Image: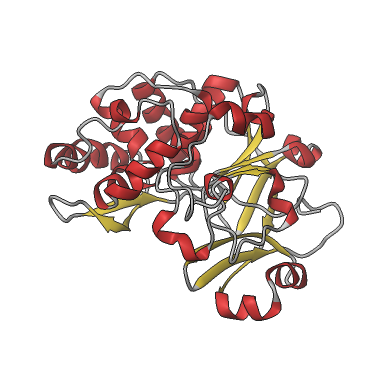
Length: 316
């Protein structure tokens, strides 16, 4: 499945779901990324499949409920890339340096893995959010109002990538065939949409009490920075509920409950140059450093998280 040789390759939801049938199963436990992208995925998955939120992971710390701890081998990790073999995951980061795929990622549904993209293919990286990938897999087209469209396209700054990387965006809309991308992104590449984001969406997000930080990308028309939201489940419970309510009211989705967390597991997050990993070999590096999750965040850099190998911990 080499995209350098086959630029016309298309994927179909049915083929992907044949390999990852759990994406259509109901009443699954899941842990979401501790940010806006994870929260909106949580609301969507609870609404359409009755998935139950078991915790969060912010790439340094895992918050996990009693039910999640007891069923850790069955938990699905959403908007995340984790390495343990029993850990099913759905996410969108590049994880291969030169085509070598660690065995743990065989249970990860990731568009970049499906297309066999590596650290040398960043210009072809999947540009949208995990939420939009789930829409495509489920053949789900949401009811769209101005606010619901903005909330949805705000996930992983999908509207900004659509504006800033039009060729790659169109390429992926072709790869992920049989979906109404034109309806979802209607007028997203316009000054009017960009103005609505700043005047109509970001004020709603600020009203939840969430801390908005500037993202890397800026709008094409007004050159104003995007906003991102990270959450800390230790003290952001009220903010999470307000974000759930904002998303639910705008989309018509029913948000999940927020479970009490039985364990908070602290990890160690690191950054390393890819050249150093390549000298050791990816699999050898991952094993030696007890890596739980990682992502190649640029053609030169790998970020990873390790946890102590404690008997009974979620990493085993």
